[in-house]
Structure formats: structure tokens, C-alpha cells
Length: 457
Length: 177
Image (cartoon, rainbow over the protein chains, first blue to last red):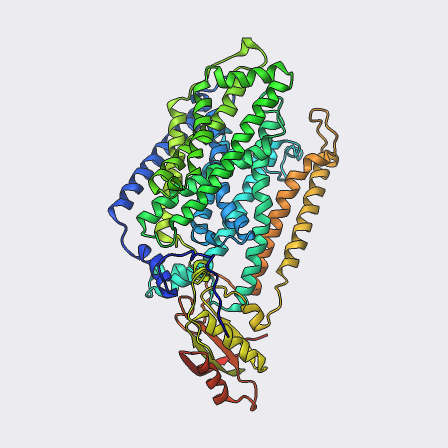
């Protein structure tokens, strides 16, 4: 039988690796003692987390009067951070679910860490509304439960109630999806270790996985079903987040473009965060053969595409406001571009619409330092996008007598820094104790685009 | 009850796929195939039917959606109606988002729960590994020696012809059905 190989497909994984080599490459960094670089990064992240914990402790003990909010600007820094972190999470689900359904095989190298990023980002995001409640120990009031106040139920017509359900479902499903993906890899690690407490732990969490194909067959089905569920879920989550704004009657918020605009923006910023993390991880853990320049380039194209959607949304929004004939709408958008917060508007436009255009050039897409810088700038821009949407729409509202200024206090800034600390602390711990590359999936695409030695019988 | 099984260990995806196809074409009973990853096309080679977990997903999702929709209508329109901005008691369109979220939650958790149960994946279960490297880089084909007609030398030769690195006979506890 003649074998024909296509010359059009390129291998996904560089270096001619065998199956055992994959296991070795992924597990080795976990079995070594962490290097000084890891400790340095961990120390910085944990310090930032410490600042955050102190700030949150102080503001809960004192009250949210410690923030720079006033009666006009009732939402600012914390809701900005909430939307920012939720958005970051969405790229992980895009990679793990949507690209899986689209049979994008390159995703296997990045999906594990992108899903971890989703989980940690959702944890960070979830903290902000809870802190904003002022009395976080009553957070369970957002869920309907039989109580002695009637029972008085929550208002299911409120987007804030939708949000509570959306975020908690998103977190649960993402966590389950991630864990299901981890089981075969936990078994691989279990079988490498000498008997010890560590082995025992991996044994418990790998649930007795033995590589049976009957199980693999069901596993594939579960994975597909979860991907099919997570895909509309991720769209619904950011849609609902955008409804927090769009269902109100604030000029600048009350727009039907919000759901697609927010979802595109979320994937845009999340992809940039995946790039930032992957570029660090491939270098720090010597995974250049797994997360290749080709992977980076493909993700850059996604950043470029979603960045284009975000740019289009900015233009549409601006045009619609001017064309609406509504003086308040027109004012809000002119005020964004030329008012007291114009600087934040132009940071947003520059970082989200201007800078990503550099990615049209292949030389820039394939240059790791350039992509790293761009990915960080995109996230700066996306943070300011949420800030612009929230603060500039509120600070000059319908009554000029109510106009107010807003600037964050140290407590708010420390909380933001703390959320980055939490995110990176969790991510660094993940890199230490769990396989950052989905071995079970990478092994399946190892031979992709590479002629195999097939012995004829 | 014990049973005799024949275990063939292979090194590559192509070998195990070809061996499995061959063995099945000869009508031998495949107990299972063990692999470090989901080998593409192995379900057809083994003649496995598509999993029915999708039914669990559909039923659980539908159940979650119906229960949640009923709960929202019951709390907002029957148990304690509250006038919110003059909206109707039964504000059906506004109840859709949470209904969707709960549907996804039910469907996802039930599917995973059902999978763990049918695949007997439970915390603390000790794995019975056919080969210590089967989660790393080895593939194993396990056949049941059903009756006297099982031609051991011929099957062994068949496995060798597909580059089996090891073929051995074992006696194991038959799983209680």
C-alpha cells in the first residue's frame, strides 16, 4: 500500500519527539526544585496579594467609603476590575471549547494553561462584586434560598441576579472541564512517581484512571459535550455582564451593541493575556518545542481579528450616538473623547485599535519580544476600555448640577494590585504542581504533519 | 470467576490500530485497549458504539431548564409577587438568562457525574495497570481466551506480526457484571 503525505500540513510540535519524551518534557519542571526565577516571581506575586488582602481587610472593616466613589460616580474601579478579569477568562474557554469544536489542533499545546487562566481570572473577577457589597458575609443573599423573611425571593428580572448565576455557572463548568481534562495527565504523573505522599495525592485525584479505551471513548464524548455547553455559556456570560450596563438608562450604556462588543473585547483581552503567560511559560519551563512561534503567530491573528471587531464597535457606537439625535448620547461620546477623561479614552483607542495593527506584519507576529509587549499594551488598553465605559458615562450625567470627578484612592489601587497578585500566585502554583501542557492531547497530535514509519505487514 | 486473557503490548499508534482491526476481523473477543491518549479511529477498530452520555446531557439539561423556569414563575408570580417597575408578574423574557445558565449547569454536572459513575472513576480507586507504561508511551491490547477454539500460537503470531514488543498470558479476576 502506497503512503501519501500532504506537504501542506506542518507539524504542530517541533523537534522529532517520541511519546515518552513528551511526558518527560512536561513532567521534568514539576519534579525539579523550583529555580530562583520562580521564587522571585512567587515572592513578587505573593507580596502583591498581601497588599490586596490588607486593602480588602481595611475596606471591609471600615466600609466602602474608603473608595473614591461619590453619589454620581457610583461604579468605578471595582466594576472595571470585575469586567476586566471576567473578560480575561473568556479566551481560555475559547481555546478549550470553541477551538476544540472547530478542530483546531494547535490548541492542544495551550489549552491546559489557558483553562487554568480562566479559572484564576474568574476567581479574581468574582471577588470584586462581593467586596462591593460592603457586607460580603451576606453574599449568599444573591441566591434564592428559603428564608424567614417571607420567604422573600430575589428579583429574577434583574441583570445583577443574572450575573450571579452566570458567573457561578461559568466558574463551575470551567472548573469541571479543566479537571476532566487533567485526569489522564494526573494518572501519567502518578505512574512516574515513587511511592510517597505526593504519589498518594495524585492517585486520589486521578480517580483510578487506567487508560482503558472504553473510558477514553466516553471521555471524548464528555469532552465534546462540555465543549458544546461551554461555547454558548461563554457567550452568555459576557452578554449578561454587558446587560448590567445596557439595561440601565444611562447614556453611553443603553445600547444594543453592548453584548457582541463586550464578547469580542473579552476574547481580545483574554487572547492577549494568554500570549503574555505563554511567552513567559515557554521560556521559563523550556517548552519552546510545544508552544512554537507558529502558535504565537496564530494567537496573534486572533488578537488582530478580535481587535478589529472592537475597533468597529468603537466606531459604530460613536456614529450611532451622533446619528441618534439624542443630545445626551451625543454629549457622552464627545465628552469621552474630549472631556476630562479624554486621556483614558485615547489610551484605550491607541492600545486597542492602533497598536494591534502592527500584527498585520509577519515580522512582528513572529518576533517574541514584540508580541510580548503588544500583548501587555492590549491589556492596558482593555482595562481602560472598561474604565472609560463606566466612569465617563457616569461622571457627567443628565443634571449638570450633579457632575462630579472621580479618582481612585490608594485602597482601590491596592485592591487591583492585589487581584494581579492573586492571579499570578495561583498561576505560579499551578505551574509547580500540575502539568502545564495537556500531555494526553499533545501526544495525539504528535504525528500530525509528520510522515510516520509504518511497517507494512 | 477468573478468566484467561492474552495481553499484547505495542509501541506505536499505527501498530495497535492495525492489530486491533485484525483481531476484530477474526472475531476474537477484545476485553479492552489501553492507550496513553485517545487514539483516533480506535472506536471503529474496536467496534465501540457511540456513548449514550449525550442522552444524559439532553435530559438533565431539559430538566434543569424546566425546573428553573417553573421556580422563577412560581416565586415571582405566585408565591410572593413583587411589583418591579410595573413589569408583569410573569416576566418570561427576563427569566430566560437564568434558565439558560441553570440548564447548562445541570447538563454539565450530570454528564460528568454519569461519566465518572459508568467509567468507575472514583477517588481512591486503585488503578489496575495492564502495563506500567500504559499512561506514558505504551499501548496494550487485551483479548479474552474465550474457549478451546482460541488458537493461542496463531494469535500470538498475529500480534508479533504487528510489532508487539511483548505478548503474555494472564489469569485475572473477571469483573463482576
